[in-house]
Length: 124
Image 1 (cartoon, rainbow, N blue to C red):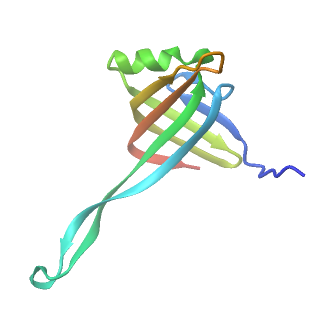
Image 2 (image 1 turned 60 degrees about the vertical axis):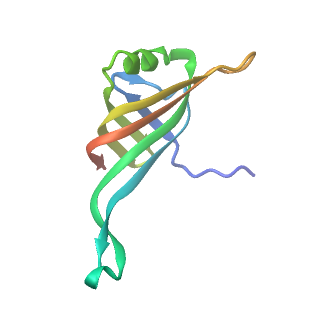
């Protein structure tokens, strides 16, 4: 019996382009930025939280993704992002930090995308 979670991805857009039909996989990774803290007389070092952020990484089939490569190469890399899985929806502004086109002979052409969020990720 196949395992089913019921949380399929129903929306995946970058800028004004919908990539749901071409999406292979993606992940949203939240992180805490830290700085080195000091203890009494500098005998103990410990990290302190100084901010939060998030990154989005994914793999998209190239059928309709040529626009992502031109977006990053022309220097207009700020995009809006919308992702919906089941009852969870994420939206934010993000900077497209990397687009990689993997060329495979006689195979499906894929693009790897990486984005860093700007500001807050809205979770609903």
